[in-house]
Length: 306
Ligand SMILES: [Zn+2]
Image (cartoon, rainbow, N blue to C red; front, side):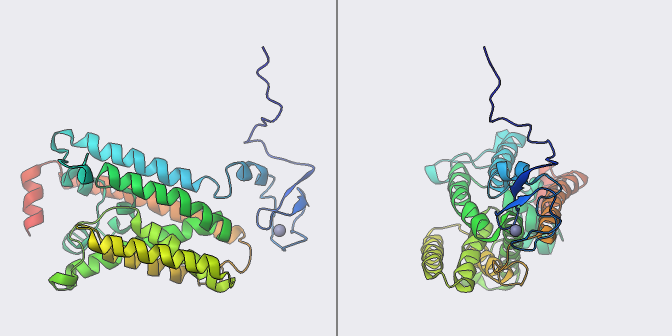
């Protein structure tokens, strides 16, 4: 039996000779080129690792990171407090308890403005409130993230998604703390939908910058339809959707993030910074919850009533 697949190369192996494609413009270059002759990107082969990254896909695997990250965290929020899993009807089947959502870094007016847990503005984007919630959001992520990666580049996708999550939860927490009842935001907010609306905002910005009216129109239509569905569905964090869209749109207009030029090393470094910040937010949330003895339910209720 021959296990050797000729197409399998060691993906961690650094390429030192021959040709590869430029990480930014995808043109064929020599792996030893210091600058891409086509798009002038510096270090276009990323020290010979561009082939490795290309194998991870146009998004360098970030879509998979979001989906697996959200699914694992969803499972963790269920397992940590099995006794209090909620869910009578289909819309909230398998809902983690509010305690475990707070433990893992749920956001909103209560955590941000009452408790001062500002890191939840990012951690909450990786948490979900029910099976349907996580399933719908991940279906949208798998579709839109690849589109944004194709349009902007993988590094910019990470940056746009991260900023949109933060701006979404900032909007819903501000509206939850300071707006009167009919317009009020969320006391507790979770979910990737702010990031998803941010991806739609980015595609609208892309359509404007590149004068691609089909992309712009489709992204607008999707955003409006999804926003209206949110408004007529109870318990949806509409401020989070709005804030995510605006954040994703605005950040995509910044020179260096906008899709006018191929991305380079600076965007990659920023993207890695965003990933580190995301891990930091989740770790901080859990560490902070432990120091507050969050599993002690009476103590938690006392906190909440303040
Ligand atoms: Zn190039």
